[in-house]
Image 1 (cartoon, rainbow, N blue to C red):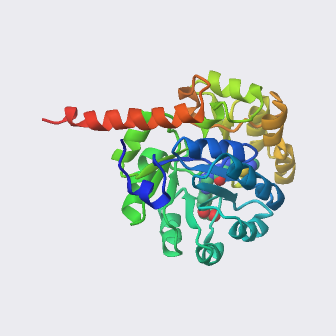
Image 2: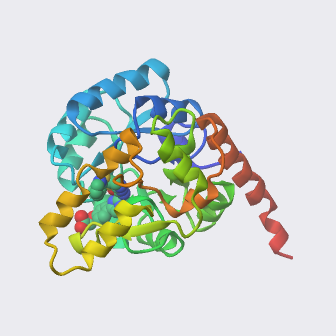
Amino acid sequence: MIDSILCEILDIKYPIIQGGMAWIANGKLAAAVSNAGGLGIISAMNSASLVEQVSIAREYTDKPIGVNIMLMNPEAEKIAAVVCELEIDVITTGAGLPNKFMPMWREAGVKVIPVVASASVAKLVERSGATAVIAEGCEAGGHVGEIGTMALVPVICDAVSIPVIAAGGIADGRGMAAAMMLGAKGIQCGTVFLSAHECDIHDVYKEKVLSAKDTDTILTGKRLGHPVRSLKNSFSRNFFKMEYDGNISNEELESYGSGSLRKAVVDGDTSGGSFMAGQSAALVKTKRSCEEIVSSIANEASALLLEASKWVR
Ligand code: TUI
């Protein structure tokens, strides 16, 4: 059994947090992860759907749940206020600095765990009252920073005194054990949960994740200042080419990308959809329940950490 301070802080069995995937992480998935002993997270798309998804999650579980707020979302301000009225346990944030919302969230008694991609941002959010930070390396899916998990996690562990949760490239017990050796107190996984029975993405999306190999993801959007990792397909390859075409404006690029994640998740549109996934897609080979995913990652990590002394004499 993994022993981590994070389990006490968050009142969970295993220090495994589910990533807040836009269009994907709904109340049903979050409840399944929380019932499995991890921390399920609902992605807040807008305030009305958030209220609905939190109530769905509450129907399925009485365990702690969290909400992810993507700070680039034009509705972030409204969602930030609404979330205080819902009895949720944890807020995770992504794609920006959550500092201006922190006093309001802390006053509402919510634990705040920002996703960060650098040591400087980790220090900033620690100072503004974060409970823990998620150090997300660029192996992750969706919007990513520049530094890989292997270098980022120990750098952030040295920079802050709050617990650090590792993310990016982790989909099994080997990744979890390695993250703990880097100083992390827990992990966040997104991609592996795309394969879960309880994850309601289009079957085409699920199959693309299950068949992905190590070289099947691509980074696009660097020119726009928000790099995104997704599976290679005609949409992401075209986007990549357009970024290097000086005749194409940033507005044209933005409009080419808009709505593409929905096309992948809801329609399973193989040519026009953005199938966001991390490099760990190559490790995801079977459909399983959240219960199987969470317990197998934790049990495999426990076994490896128990055996770690074999490397020393
Ligand atoms: O946020 C994510 N991953 C995401 S958000 C998303 S939605 C989207 N849809 C279409 C296009 C673009 C995005 C899909 N995936 N991960 C957390 C994350 N946060 N990664 C990197 C950061 C981050 C970056 C900079 C956190 C803080 C930060 O602060 C510095 C600053 O400049 O704001």
